[in-house]
Length: 111
Image (cartoon, rainbow, N blue to C red; front, side, top):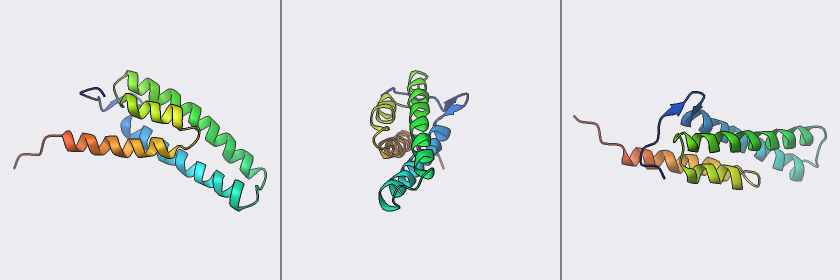
């Protein structure tokens, strides 16, 4: 991981990507519920599946670009791009893990 991550590069801020990842996880949960628990109601299952696929493509491209700009770590970008198609929860978890890691490394405020 890069020693210093920048807070954001235009619209590719860590916070925006994190919340988009959480929204993607919510869409995926809704897709799983529709597909397996609700009997695959159409066109809702199709719309959720399409949304999940498009969000995965967008998040993959955005996180890989953000990794190149040192906004997110390479580990996080790989989790989103490689594992995000199967389960976007991996990416959401990595955002939480990286945020905690950054907070742990941040210097304590002086009193």
